[in-house]
Amino acid sequence: MKRHTMRYLLVCMLLLVACSKKPTDYREFLNGTELVYPGKVANAKALPGDGRLQLIWQPSPDQSIVKYSVYWNNGADSVIFNTTNHNTSDTIRCTIPGLSEYVYTFIVVSSDAQGNRSVATEINNARVYGAVYKATLHNRLPDTEPYAILDNNVVVLRFTTPDTINITTTLKYTNQGGAEATAVLSPEDDSLKLTDYKFGTPIVYQSSYIPVRDALDTFYTAKYDTFPSIQRLVQCDKSLFQEHDLWGDMGIYQSDTRVSKLWDGSVGPQDYPNIFHSDGNGSLPRVLSFDMGKVYNNLSAIEETGRTCCNNPDQFEVWGIDDLTDAVPEMNSNDAGWKAAMQSKGWTLLKEVVRSDNGNAAFKANLIDNPPPVRYIRIRVLHNANGENSYVNLSEITFWNKE
Image 1 (cartoon, one colour):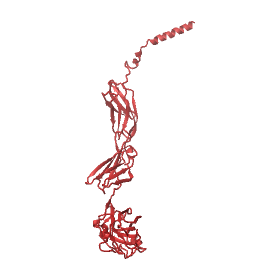
Image 2: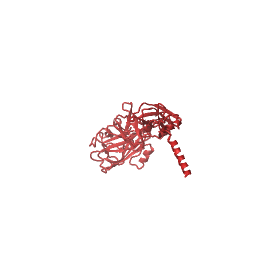
Image 3: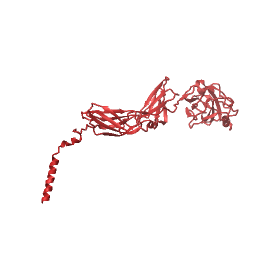
Image 4: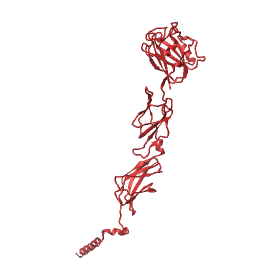
């Protein structure tokens, strides 16, 4: 009992000593001061940019805060942002330039005038973009059918859907007044119209992007690309056309049914004598020739119109060449070797037209792609729709060149 009593008294004495300590006795370890933590920032995040970024946050309502300190690269780099703004509905913005393309972690600390510091706010995965990102950017691609030309010569340019966060695509072109003009295609649109484009001139374009929404900077591709060449069909000038009979050409029925009737500007099937009417001194295939008056480098289409009634070709060949020097085979056009002889003399078969109607109405056909230069034309009629084997009747022939 004596031993138990002694132990009890010892425990009571220790408790009395312990209870005599004051709650503020920790100050002896802090040199008599208190630990003060200013309020920390809220909703902090980073907006990426080109060799820079911007940190944003909402300030603390703590009125004692006089500055914010931002640290990165494990504290090796820092910036001080002085402030008197304590409105939590505002946004503090701190732009940091001169950064390498990298992913950073930033620390934001609030401080009061006595140097007390808040608990740190960490902003992770803060991305800075630069040359590596730019190298991945490409201009928006034209569509598989890149353009259309409307009746009033308005050009519609077509593009595919952009594959990343496209901002704009800027186009530069020459207008009809000869001056440089600019048009802008938004990412939501897949086409735009040029109402004043000067045909035959180049169009270049450049796209811009942002890496993520709310990015600080817009990034442009390294260079402009050239839009596919825009060409329109322009009717060949019939005022330059001239008769030019070649060896083996069919004769005419009478003096007012000459080959020149084919470019007199008549519209629709004509009746005798406002037509070309051959003589009957031969059998199909028969050929006629003429000079278009100038060289065309991209002859692209022909339209042929027959007579109102009869003897209209429904199968014929269109041949072209730019120089007649030693180019005319002295061979009848119904000779089996005529086609080979023409090719050996440098002529190009531009089209073999086959019609399935009676041959009266205007019939338009595209010629071969990428033709050689052409000035002189030979039309070799192979068959008439009504079966006539000697006479050939035609009202009009029109050609178009692609420019």
